[in-house]
Image (tube, rainbow, N blue to C red):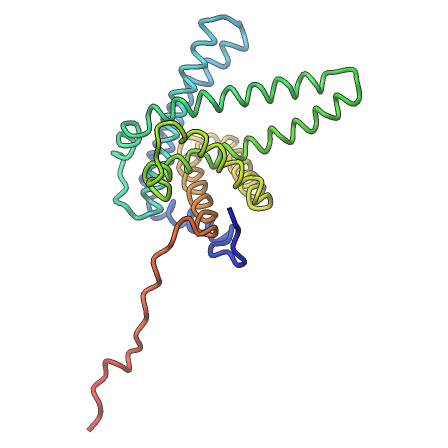
Length: 261
């Protein structure tokens, strides 16, 4: 990706657009947040059960509840995409997302879980080592984990763009996973200040929502999905992948006035 000299959409402009869309479509924002919150309850219950007792049943519960949470999150992201593109958004977007993206979301969630566990396991292993050099390397792996977490925020919007948006013309059966993962890492590493700001604001919003409790149920997922979609599309616009329609020409009123006699 070659970055243009002057970006079209800034970080804060994309954030403002997401905030305006969340306000304009408040009902859909609340509904998507509630659906995600309801799907997150089985996940946290299964995680708590796994914490108390490690067994095959508990591991299976965590796996299937995480898949359910990923599928609902994909519905939130697709709804946010339809809101951002002014393409008749409704709660039926969840059904459309599951029909078109259900299997892709499943495989993406499996890969995300596997990579996260591998990086986290190595980080813990190195940090708990008695060798100073290995502990230093553990800190490096921690930064790699943070980069990976940031790349995760791009991956679902990029998957939507792959199927419905900017990259739909290049769909293939074998390469979609590689393309989504590669592009998410390129956007993260190639735009570190942008990506770090995105991660920081989402983390702050998560803390605020979950401390307030009611915010986690009513506003968290709806706003975060809109924000990640707008930020991802802003970078794709800045790279020239998405071409915005030209602004309508404003014709002065003087041209419509009849000449005075």
